Length: 274
Image 1 (cartoon, one colour):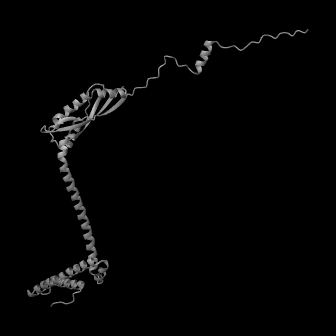
Image 2 (cartoon, rainbow, N blue to C red):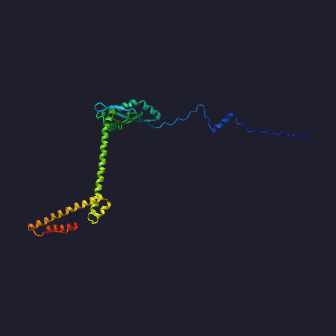
Image 3 (cartoon, rainbow, N blue to C red):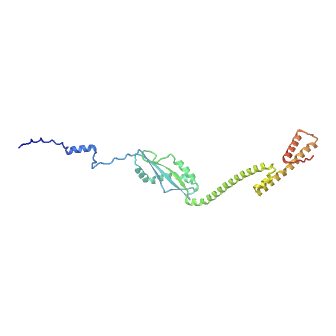
């Protein structure tokens, strides 16, 4: 019986212990510990919050019978604070900010009549421009702009005035347009009539544009030509007057005589009175 020699024991691969396996795994993907917290987001260096307040601030107008309504818009600015924190601060100090605006507006508002809200708005914003509250320190602060509207009772009384004014201004603009169009139309017709006056066929050709235009054109030509004999007779009298005085044919009378002949030829007048 042949006995086979036994093989030497095989040396297996070494298996890492539990601590070693943990260290090897942590290198690839660090585990989340039970007490790990997310990173805190960075706080911006400067944050701004615009606070548009719907409730108006009431200040008396001149005479104390009516109030102006101030609609304030606050712009808050802070350093090293979150937006939410600045918003909460603005809401917490809203009454104080409204008191600041009311104090600055009180004496100024009493200088304006109840229907002069626009003038007060301009003057008050000029007064508030460039100012901040609190005025000192590095804590959060605000600046403000206001919109001013009149009392509702004043608005109702102003409505008929503005309706009538709008009506008058619209009528005025309409009359200006009509006048401009009439002037343009008159100039165009004047140019047409003057260009047609000396043409012998225009009296008949005018009928092609309509009976109304033909009639107007006929009267225009008759009136224009009717003044010519009167002017010619006046010039003749001027020439005769110089002759009656015994002045003789001077350059002056010769010039008038030449003007008469030219005017007669231009208008078709051939008869002369000696």
